[in-house]
Amino acid sequence: MDMPISERRQIENEMIFRRANEQIGINLDEVDALNVADGNAHLVRTDDLLLEFRCECSDENCHERIPVKLSVYKEIHLNRDTFIIKEDHDVKAIEKVTVVEVDYSIVKKNKSTTEPGKKLNDTDVDNS
Image (cartoon, rainbow, N blue to C red):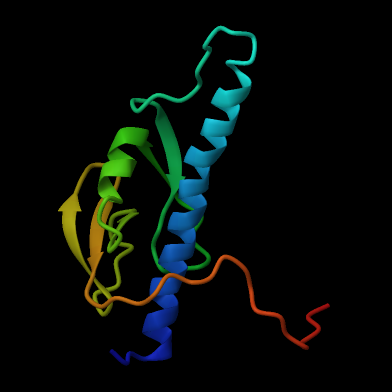
């Protein structure tokens, strides 16, 4: 499905922010692995661990944080078309608010696009 580049870019921004948030769980797994080395489990991560995730809105300049339990964050993202954002950070052209909580909203994409790659494409442009 064709969509304007600006809408596609907004959706990609949200996917990139979600990927950064998901990295938190991976990092916690690594910390947990280090903490069982002595034979005793001193786990950092539990599903009830309250973390501050980055707002997954489409605004690349947004730096707002959302306090939510790890288990809630995981549940929200069982559907890959949903994102957690601060209230009123939705863009009606690309998403619909499906849930409103005290500290955040959950949005679902109106259209889908593929997830952006894990690395930037090589280019001749010198941005220095």
